[in-house]
Length: 273
Image (cartoon, rainbow, N blue to C red; front, side, top):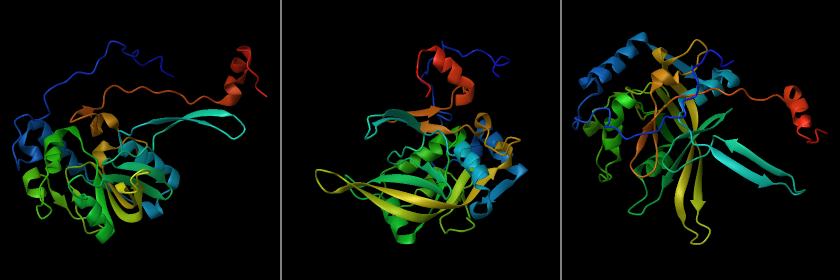
């Protein structure tokens, strides 16, 4: 399968660079740079709007896992009551303040909000009160615009004007989505889960589960299979401290099939019964 692809580059090492737009100023729009302007030109190809209740769950699953990226992976080890050891990767791990796909049927995403130390986050209070929110995925051309909204502004202050981002009306919910985002979701509150500290008994964080009602994805981001092309999408991830990361090289691995591999397993001297 991979014979025609270049070999995996073992010499590649992550490095720190300047942000995409180091000269960005408050309120400056995405199209103020050549890269940002090119990004916004893609919108001219229109949008594919997915009403999740009418979409095939399998196709919805493929769309969501290609658009809600990157996702952290939890490699979980367990032992059953009978002593059988198990270890498996999970890409539905929820991390505080990071939106993440939980399941595709029904289509759910989660946002975990820390409750403090100064006050409960506005997002937590707002979602609890209105039962609605949108989730937009951040791409490289508007990293600074997104980052500035993390400012510790008072509760009465709106971060929209200083971001330079554009509010776009939603179809189903009142909160707007970010027009500059190539993949965004309209959500209704599905469940609130307060994470209770086992020692203090206090809710140190809250997980908000959102039922995705509509997905908005730009046509110029889609592959022929209807999934999001990561090389065009340019999604960002958060790392430790204040570090952001861009998507590097990807590689594909075929999921092994037991019937095709069991003879090789047997050759290792392992029981296949």
